Length: 201
Image (cartoon, rainbow, N blue to C red; front, side, top):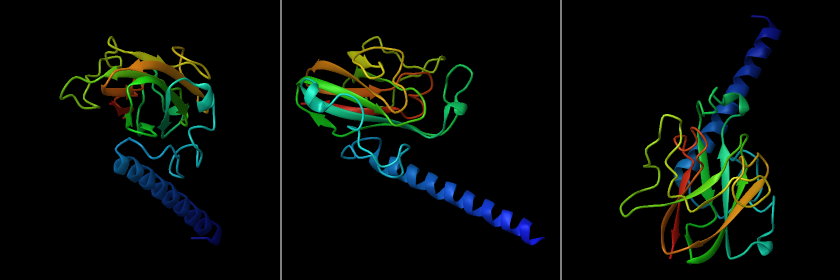
């Protein structure tokens, strides 16, 4: 083997090890938190790097009620999307800066730290039902007929066409005590892990 070929082989091995270590760290971060709160901080293992959920969009002081910051993240890029818009591999997640919130006016502010569009839909959980247990239909979505509201407008409130990467959207709701599942219901995203728990007391 020539010196030049040996150099390329070593460079390829170093790149492969770097990708593997980053992937393991990202997966470990996801597994240890269960897709829930990490004090609103995006660590180095997150797509988008080390930035907080409040870097983008409306300031908390401009939003009504208790503000819950939610971050959407994914591993991959637009090239990973299937022809129908479904996710073909990797992990996606939603994380909140808190799991518990007081009943009343709550604003859920979603920051998209991923590489594809995301949204946030608020669904009540039945007694005994856990997050991640909803049936996924053939189109890659879950039933959201009992939705209380959604944040899917880029840099705005309420429903839209999806929150673009690097932007935020929010929804303000009057939430009664109970357990709620926050989900991204774009095709394939729920099955890829985009759900988390919010408890209202």
